[in-house]
Length: 228
Ligand SMILES: [Zn+2]
Ligand SMILES: [Zn+2]
Image 1 (cartoon, rainbow, N blue to C red):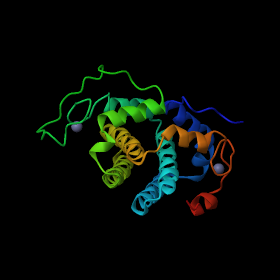
Image 2: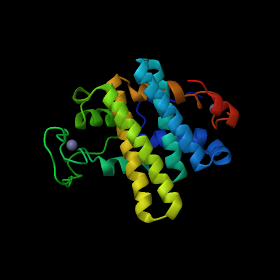
Image 3: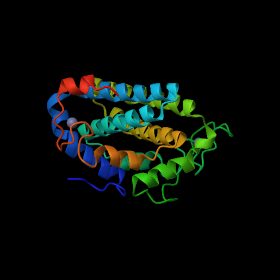
């Protein structure tokens, strides 16, 4: 069964990833395994940036996104909510609708008025919003890649901190870091000219992009050896 995903929301995509991968993820992978897979594909997308290979960037960025959503599912984190909490229509540091962090040096964070804009309904609206807050013209694709790598590391760090002590504060750090990484995924997409929803539709409208099943029936070895 083929799904139309054109107008899918971020929450809808997260749910779809749960439908496709929730069962095999729960049976096959620890949270550490999931982080490793997430990092593996994120790094491959960076390799695509270094080599100027758009196809490699696209595919691996989308797989990294799906693993990040799977990690969010494992923790029962509603990605749509945490991203909006972190980016309510404005930059989280300077509070501007188009970030001015590079132009002005802030000594402390401004409070953001969350009621300035309405929360994006679709993936496409999220992508447009991130391009408004952080226009692709303000950075190179390499810079977007370096920022992405930084955030991938911070997600991992926050998860490991939480697993060590299980503090509430550490759980909310996981939420913040996931939101930051999502913003960087859209950032790379905007810098590289990738339409996220088009790629998502190509990959997931028939289930898993490898086995084309819902739930996915790819085994551990297949996922471990997947060449992208
Ligand atoms: Zn800013
Ligand atoms: Zn599969």
